[in-house]
Length: 130
Picture 1 (spheres, rainbow, N blue to C red):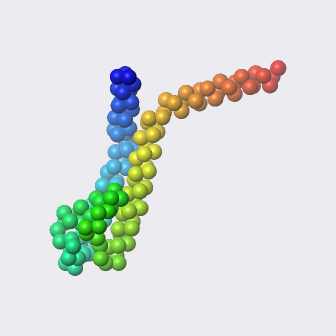
Picture 2: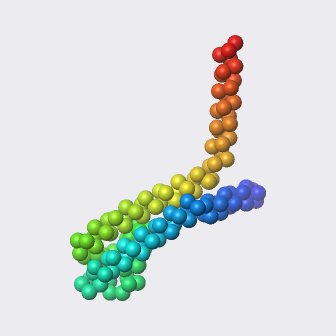
C-alpha cells in the first residue's frame, strides 16, 4: 500500500510540474487578474458593495472557482459580461486541469491496454494467414 501511494504521489507531482499544467495555471491566473483589474476600474466609483481592489479580487476568485458567494457582484453591463466570461473560464480550467491530471494518472494503464491490443491484433493476423 505504501509503495502504491508513493507511486501515485510521484505521478501527481509530475503532473503538477508538467509544462502544460504550469502554462494553464499561469494563463488562468493572468486571466483572473486581468478581468478583476478591468472590472475594478469599470466599477470602483459606482459599486457600493465592492470598494477595494481586494473586494474585486475576492469576487474574481469566488467567481472563477464557481463558488460565487454573492456578497459582491458587478453592477454594470460590461462588468456582468466579463463576469460571465470568468464563470465559463473557471469551468473550462477545471475540466482542463482534470484532463491533465488524468492523463498522468492513467498513462501506464493506457500503455498497457495499447500493448495488449497490439498483441491481439498480431494474433488475429496470424490466424487470418492460416
